[in-house]
Image (cartoon, rainbow, N blue to C red):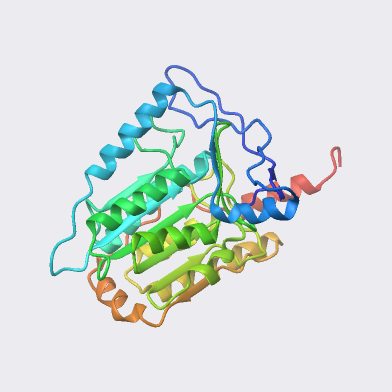
Length: 340
């Protein structure tokens, strides 16, 4: 699930979405070329500037801007505070692209992770329309909204003992996560920018799950003693399953929708998910995405205690599950010349 990228130029992609008055709210289309986001006198300087997390909003309706501001404020204002003497988990699930697969994945990932870690009332979902609800009542995912949400979580949690669980899902580039909302929102969330946001917020204990192509680029920048990080791919590989009509990406389906629904440790769940994903990709004949896992040495001081409290009964996967047979037929159709 990658975004084609050369210095500061992206190629937007997606599907045309029909909209009628009695239909569910549909995500906006990606129809225009990606604008330049880098700054500087030459390509090297522009490339370097992307690490600062540039974001561009253009042509957004003023009333929608106000609505989004109110939605985000209401959501953050309703976050339950930390309980003294108890380790609380705060879950933030973010879709950074308006393709509906990411909105669906972010919603259900929030449900699964909130249940697993006992984070009811301490869970935030940032996502655009999923193509099924009549009106989207969630704040949209963006780099700015995500940054504000992380900072607000840091305000209400005890940063020395409580835990952040962050799930992000979007398209990716070798430079980081692409923020792309229709033709009005564009941005690049680099590993350096996310690292600096978490450092500024003072959030020490964290489980970071990053679903995107090339997401392994985040591991060297975010790994640490109190950080567990799982990514959908290694730094130079794509991941799969991000077609807009899907309910899950391969990574989200395997790790969130299946493995993490079970009362097993994060380490066991990631191993199970990687085996599943590798099997799907091998059956399709595509290069393996090679998901990455890094669990810091101090994570064992707090994560096992949290996982000991998770529900003992597994829940069933939801949505349209990964169907390798159907995908193989689609791949073969694309490879077969017309008329043959």
